[in-house]
Length: 478
Picture (cartoon, rainbow, N blue to C red):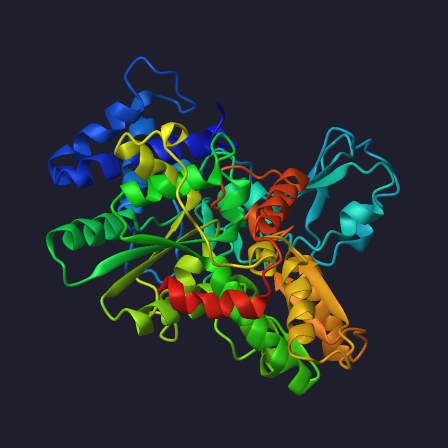
């Protein structure tokens, strides 16, 4: 039974599981020192030079499992001691260099960074090189290559680079906290902070204090996760963790689709506001286009607001595939409605910290959202929901021309076309993760088309319910 894509995810999960296990019993502080030995016993093979370095790195993972550096506003952090196995980034001359006489690489270098040895083999002076790539393009043997670290290649907003000391460095002024670097780092040296201790604390206090209730809000991408169990078994497992109730973020998606379609018809052009990483990308790189971003809060924040208006005693925890949601929950516009965010990886750790085997549980009820709200989890789902919303608002006269963008590169292309007046669309659906939320950094598995199919099947279980009907039924749920 495979629960994770990579061994790195499994290692992080084990740390989270042990931190949570001791937290439930109020014995975390006295057992912190024992967690590295539990996760990596002395006879366990290690990828590091020695078991001691592995455990030192585990100590840093434990800190992030406990919330990380609270002074750093970014939810993504680099474990410097773990970030020392990647090659130095930049252009390098390979063994394919023939020591030719033409030396076109030298001719095109704007910084005179290329020199030759006695065999006329080229060498690049890293202190002068500006990584422009002119030499690589000029070399007739393709002997010059650009070695980029996996985290740098994964980051499409160029927010991560090599620091002067060697480890990766995140530039908060560029980062949108999508978590691509987290998932693609082969050594697990880049991680998102976990807030499971906050969630455990809320649940324990709610059990001993009737003044408030803790609601779990699950993202529709859950249908593509926990493939070894049924979705309704997962919902039952969440309830057994101690949550008062579990609701679908897809219901918030219905609310947003209903309002966003109306807003689009009124304004004539709109950019979606559902993906926090996409909205942050616009804020940091296309501020001139912020005027077109929908005024609606994300589905998470919209439903959180609704729950708290109906139940002032509510605490709301969002569970999903997204690291950027952790950052969104800290924004002043969202903070009053969402009390904590955890990922699917962290949810699995919580299950196992209490020895909850979800495959052995009965199915729990989870009703409310429409098909359109549930397919928000994959690219194109929001556009379909907006089309349905226009139909339900009686705006068949409005010609919807949507452009669904999965991944930052597609988002950038659409925004550049809008800026230059060349965009043949009146609605941009932007998602920072390729394929949508089903490929978020906090997913257990990234199944591509299989994940997309699972989300569509989950949506179809809602039957023929309209968006308006789903929104109205929310009154009966809360």
